Image 1: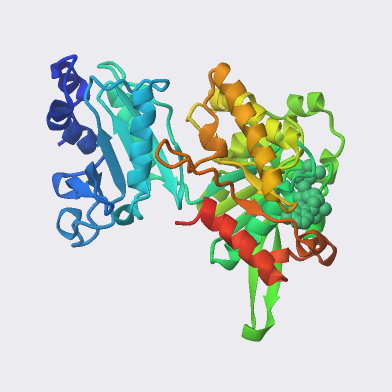
Image 2: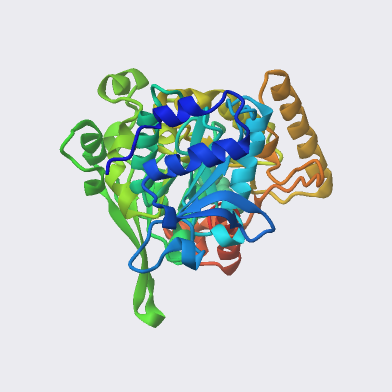
Length: 444
Ligand SMILES: Nc1ncnc2c1ncn2[C@@H]1O[C@H](COP(=O)(O)OP(=O)(O)OP(=O)(O)O)[C@@H](O)[C@H]1O
Ligand SMILES: [Mg+2]
């Protein structure tokens, strides 16, 4: 039997329906329209850290029925009453998102790939990939007219998740370690068993391509970006690192920088290509790889914009002793990324919290950096932006934790390009630094 429309359910709900009423009359209908039957839904699912999420769901596989095994949920649903304001600039909304994120990362929810918050007037879908949680839709208003369509579009997303997390490495400031980060993260994630694609989207410098000793593309990338029937993956070049002792190798794939894009003016490029083109052209790669890492140039021009548009999340290297790198991070978060979000329309990409790259930090220098960051956060607040969590993700009212992850300055990281080998494959300390960075940001 075809599921019935949400229209009658929504119109039967009183304007001020509290959570219990939304739960009773709306949530099972919503989950049914998302493709889940009653045995596939667990109410008050214990997350494993002392709390319970309102609903968890997973489709039956063979005779493994979620309601009986009570493990490995696929989707979490956190419900609110209609008295809870979930429009995206409300404090209650921020609180609900935090709560959902906490549940998604809780011990019994490791397998969850999706989270939804709704009060039946608004709904938002979030994707979880490893440790990373990012919006898969904006916070959408639900009404009698659009509800079925909105829910159908959410169902489509949860039924065909992309395999990859796409990460753009970006800072408008030059020389902060974008390329080094992209190369070494690609290498360490590969070492940890992930399928990785690295994209050199800085054709003027071509650092990622040359640091791996890979030949430049001779027009192939440009061709793939401009011609509908040419796959971007047709331009890829594998990077292989032999593991002689076990007669094996590590391999990740690289889309090299394209010579023909050198010195192309933004105007000329804009006539050829739209901002969404790299994103579009990575569609099949999103199904093949676990991670797609895109290196971008130190400016907010054409290539950076395409890289950021293509990304789910943006990783921003900074230097603790370079004020511009910190200020640039703030400008990008306040201005550039929202511009792309508005155009893209699904709530992504979102910035990950910054990290410090290079140069040893003395306590005195750290105090100066914290003062600068505090000024940046204060200025942003006056302009209506809350940047706290992008600089200090662990900071709470109860625990004023000012932790910022760091890759220290290390000669063996800088020297790696000469040997055309990522430093994580040559040096134990570098290996540990980037493994910690990968764990901090990406791995569950
Ligand atoms: N943690 C580190 N320790 C030592 N050297 C580093 C470290 N990170 C980066 N470097 C070195 O600093 C220089 C700049 O790094 P990188 O090229 O990665 O920066 P970038 O942000 O990509 O620069 P650009 O803006 O020019 O693209 C390189 O010589 C690199 O080897
Ligand atoms: Mg670079």
